[in-house]
Image 1: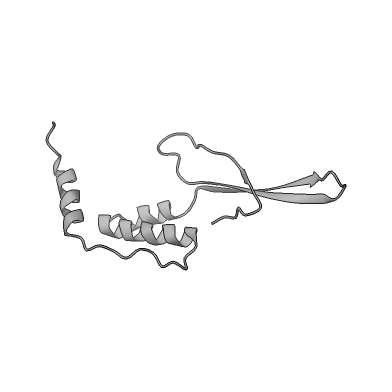
Image 2 (image 1 turned 90 degrees about the vertical axis):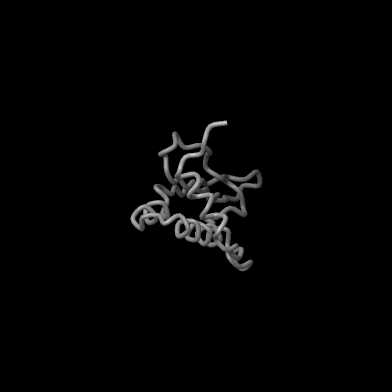
Length: 105
């Protein structure tokens, strides 16, 4: 088994000595909880504030509206979303989401 790098050992030591954090409050939306955990992780890692700011915001948000004529003749407008963050690790995956319960959270 290869020896661990000093960076890996440093992170492991920080993790071992860091106090356990509280989970995000239950009344947070999924978006708020994700941001809460991201901020906590970025702080523990000592990330550069400029990088944190870049990662905090999505690269692109796509909002679409598709009008559909239903079988009974009335018109319904369906709303869809796609949020893209960083393509640094390769091409984006996924597609536009259409569901009555989907929102940007």
